[in-house]
Length: 121
Ligand SMILES: [Zn+2]
Image (cartoon, rainbow, N blue to C red; front, side):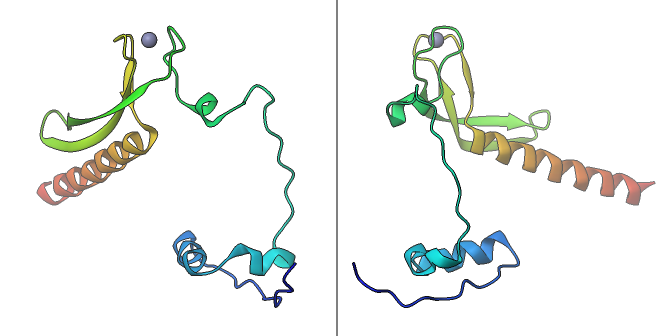
């Protein structure tokens, strides 16, 4: 085993700082400075496929496609959002990242509307 030089892990102010750091550094160089965690995996999980989102009706693995979505009463069109859907047509929902993005955009637009109403009043 290669004897690596021990390095001190810097303190990060934001998640972005940590992400930038880990883009250019290896965690192997900081093993002594990292907290140990105990990881338990559900014994029913045998492969990554077992983690895939499933149709609530027939439990089949959902597929992914990109859709355009109109929000805020049709005033804003969001393009190429990832949607998960059952191939049998039972069920469809936005993928978690797309859902989060839609919520953030709707919240930002709500704040803009509230500011505009304050200025108008
Ligand atoms: Zn289904």
